[in-house]
Length: 399
Image (cartoon, rainbow, N blue to C red; front, side, top):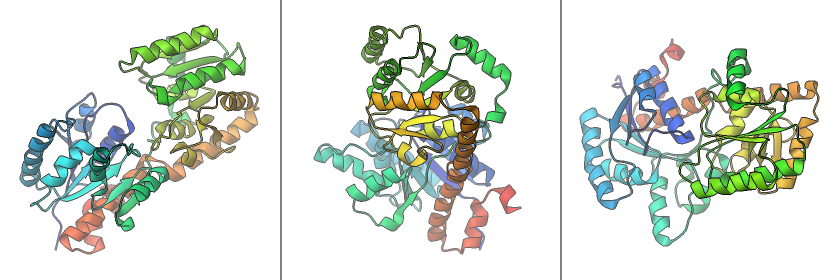
């Protein structure tokens, strides 16, 4: 028996910036390359065109809404899509649409699965019930060991249903050899970086838990007037906190040494401009793309020792762990990195690149995710491994 062209529908609230969104786009592209149909349902966003570029399909629905009435109406909307398009697998990446999708899959042949992108706050009993939908998947993907532990500690589910699949970076983009000198010069001019200044970069949207104030404090304690720092990220409307950051910079006399850039369209070049990349989150991140992107670019990474960063950075080999919220510890790490000679930095770069290539690439993430889809297809159709794998394996790999 041959298997029909598999149809996988991913659901995510919106297609904007972020790791969950990037994962959805990457997996959609890999599904298309494998000869499957890839459908993404979202409320839209700035990255819909990226799906069209890889020949994936996008359907716009208000799946971003947490309004119970809208969520209820989405059940019928999603069920209609499942039946009309012959969807085999519904893969949900967020809680609100997960509730709609779970009930939409009832009375259809579609399999329901989820991805935990973060450990959700437990909070009230109602919040616990709301969160629990993510554990109801026939397969549940955890994006890090940190998230996997959270799942097992907070939900009653068959542990054999959980799959650990780390996020991955596109090493065809994020590699030192891919960045031209012209791109570096252009970005250095845009950011007005002083000639010869060591650059310390903190990428990430401006929100309190990302550790911007601790980063500023660490720069102050470093006490080097030759160092230039760049904070890359939007405040996304958090004007009060942005004002707090500006005030902290002024109070510590760092106004001439710190530049805040709302957005960067060439992050590989941004990493290459940096002598140190920082992930300063004071709360544990589910995964965190900054550490693996920095290592893929061969740059020294200083990250707080919790959440995903505790897994992706090898302390003293590919980067350095510092205590969360400890500005003094961060300053000591900055000082150490800036004291390293060229040979030590080259060794660190090679180890970082090799570490990412072995564990955290986009291809590894996509292959493991497609393997989960194959498991569900195998169960759905009762076929052997060869038939299922051939139906969802990338065509160039099958050749």
